[in-house]
Length: 240
Image 1 (cartoon, helix red, strand yellow):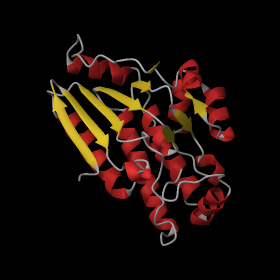
Image 2: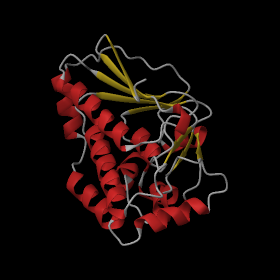
Image 3: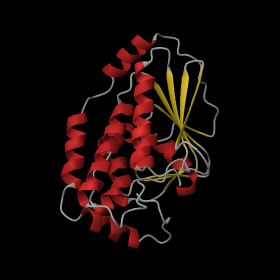
């Protein structure tokens, strides 16, 4: 069974995270598969829409920390860098991106949802951005562009769960539980790409630098372990 299921129909490429037993948490292999799939969609002029979804109960519960006990600070830093690279790739994609979320979209899963152009949440969707609780700056500037600086600071520093209706009110979700048309856009892909490029600021280097500065402070693993120990009901193999 593949950890990432890929399907294509009428110019729509769908990437389905397929690790439901651990909430579709982002392990290194899944992140690389997502990057490969997204890159293939971007390179294929016949693809006008890239859809991300998760199998099972949850969209994506964050970083897979099932091997946290044996991981080093350096290994954890590299994982976070690759996730940031994936998020930047999707944020600057020249084609339409759609996230279809249900259940938990937490941590890096919330960031994955937020970078997509159209963000459709099921009524049971909850989002959390807990990275700041162990000193990580990941996706914060992009979240600010989505929902504004004050709301982004509150979501990241507070780390509280955001229900689907709250996400809709903030502009974090585009719609709740509505069918989304995947019909081809009315403009050419090249024209749409030019419009996207003109309306997105490119801060990729600064975003990556902010992440690396935060994650490279000594004791990353210890900070994550401390955070997890304070969760009321942590998933055994799922992290922020």
